[in-house]
Amino acid sequence: MAMATTASTMSITSVTLEVADPEAAHRFYTAFGVDTHIHLRASEAHSAGFRGFTLALTVSRPATVDNSSAPPWTPAPRC
Picture 1 (cartoon, one colour):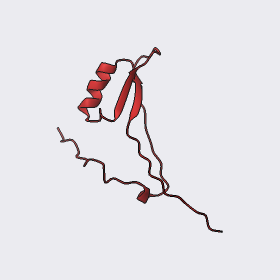
Picture 2 (spheres, rainbow, N blue to C red):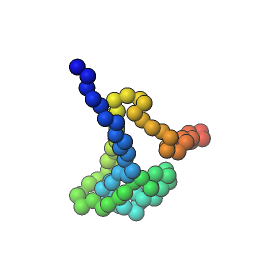
Picture 3 (cartoon, one colour):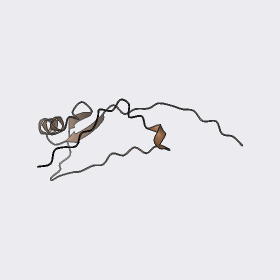
């Protein structure tokens, strides 16, 4: 039995984060050069300390990933 598959293109252009201090978060993400991909909004929930997160995208095979539009990655210089 053969199964028909359909190729679709999907891309994530930005991620929205709720943060306690949008101005400080904007400076932080700008320093890493990812501010154009991160949208920020003020959180109304009380929080304290660092809140980390991980974002993952899982694909069925390596050929599914297209890096042609990704900027070249350059490691940071060692101190």
